[in-house]
Length: 110
Length: 121
Image (cartoon, rainbow over all chains, first blue to last red; front, side):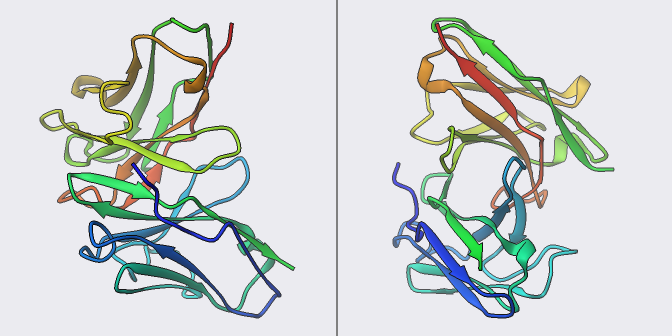
């Protein structure tokens, strides 16, 4: 099944804000507020940073925020820090009792 | 501490069978869905499917339906992912992950360390 669409890479300087988009369809993001985001550092397991479009798990920095408009979800990281450099994946529920991930976005902090 | 401990790396030949494990601790295993996620070398995450330990209800991604089998053993708080006939293209890291809420499986908050599977002749 087709993945959600994310930009392959984004970059920003420390202190700046960046936004990563995640495009889906009416079968997933457009219908369900069940979008989550994961951060994955090299050689490590993914970490949940946003769920239900815009909720943060306990312990996740308030610099991470999520939103959704129509068929597209977005992750915004404000006040970029060097430690934010990682791969980021969106994920959504899709019709038919399945979840689907995005292709992933590599964030480089310049 | 809530954690998922996965079995160690495996090296297999094409045509072999394999069963990897994911042992839960620190939470009530039967109450949380457990997902399996594949990550091929240098690639992104792929959702394979999910299983509910309470009654072994499963949901598979269409891409993995019929290719793998998920199961659990409630007596030892362990989930399993199984292949009957491995292919070279099954070489990847496989993660298990716990659903955040007991009511659904839409967000995964606890992840295992991953099991690397290498299939090569």
